[in-house]
Image 1 (cartoon, rainbow, N blue to C red):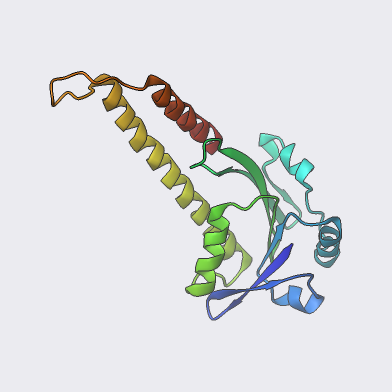
Image 2 (cartoon, rainbow, N blue to C red):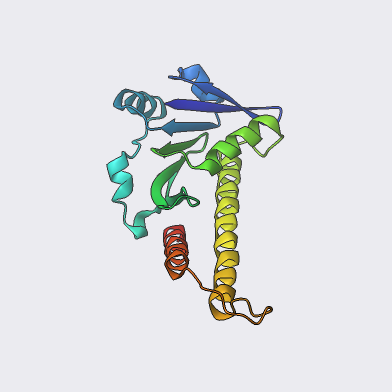
Length: 196
């Protein structure tokens, strides 16, 4: 699915579907969510650039996650998803920054991107150019990552107190459910590992 965003009065206005050359001229951010081959080819021909496939994104080496190709900057991030679920996972999202456009290529729906799009439609945001939009998107992604790290940190503190000083104030020993504590630790380890 292709969604293009145009900056009007400091807000990003969304339009879904295949784009015309005229729509491309006014678009600041073009978001490809699980694009079909037809959608990908259509956008590649309009932009004159090669966009990565899902397979290419997943195989990008760490040393190639940020690179320039002419006047185009490509950035591939591994983004944490479903951090509150029992089995969090991470997937790649690629941002392609050209002098006129930001193109995001993704096959997942990170909450941070949905929140950014909704905020940008409702509130004045920095969207005068593609670079401003990229910086704002990255800021929102980092905001969500910081929330996850803070949540893990707080719960690890609580786990430490439960294990090392259970019911210290009451002077009695309670029975701890170590299996549940280990499951929480495993979840936090998974979130932390996938946040890097």
